[in-house]
Length: 142
Image 1 (cartoon, one colour):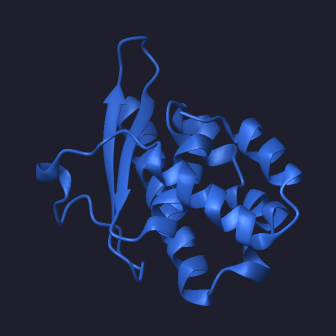
Image 2 (spheres, one colour):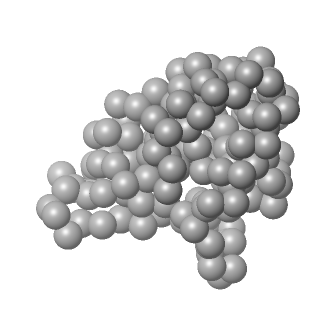
């Protein structure tokens, strides 16, 4: 998976938003395939105009829970946004997830000015879902 720092560096190299959109779509193509069975109501993210699914996998093998995700969408640009969200959150502890301000990163990338309000709401819905998962994992650990 592409790291958020690699994404940030690549965004800085792209001056035109058409090129940035193409890059976001390309990021979506790099997502690990999500099994069709995981395109379930339980994994569906509410609040997104496009269909979005996030499959949570919790690894407790090191004592501290690590949340890993697979994601998918029926829209190319949204799959790319899922890839960016996962680069921020997947493979992190609940504490790291809760301490990460994804909206600030999205603003840094210029998404507030270049995504439709519906797509921006969908991004927030994905972030809120992952943060709820992190809070639940913390509650289970204590």
